[in-house]
Length: 227
Image 1 (cartoon, rainbow, N blue to C red):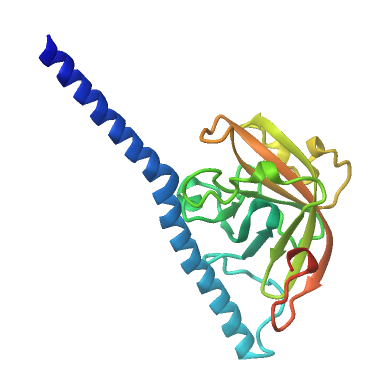
Image 2 (image 1 turned 120 degrees about the vertical axis):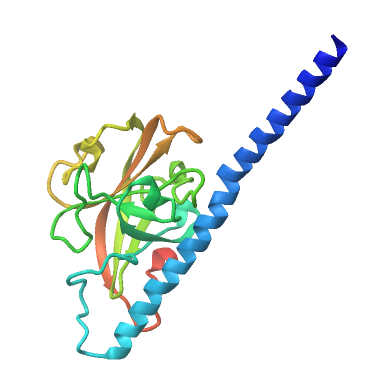
């Protein structure tokens, strides 16, 4: 009997160690790998922008027909505690696992910041794989959400949030997100991620509205909200 108890105890300890290692892998090591990949992708985008500027006047200054493979720009959100978040197309886990945020292509197609109206809707992981929206609960009304492209800063301001909703609630992505209190067409941004922390049972939503745009200067000096 003592031998059985001893073996059972050792198996439980081993199982606990394996579980602990899995948690470390999921919540730490995947962040390391994803952030490395995101840094490489971010450098590639900025190198491409620099190369375009070096070509001169023959390169369109606006978004035009975007090559979205490397990313369309960067989200700066001081309230999230992240310096910058690369934005790429798609919200499937295999895409978000790269340590980025993705804009929705389905079930609701996202508007782009430069569109005359619509909802620039984004998703990112809350835990593991870069956890870019881990601190989404810290965003508060009035906080800036600034999207950077090659030539323009799009300055949004948080005005509403929804701490918990169904993962199947696509109305939060509507061009006019009525659950946020919006009643008419505008230029909105929506951040979505899983909640509660360490689960994917529900979704946490934050909405912002565009308040102004600024041209990017030669030194890429950020707007005052990010200074």
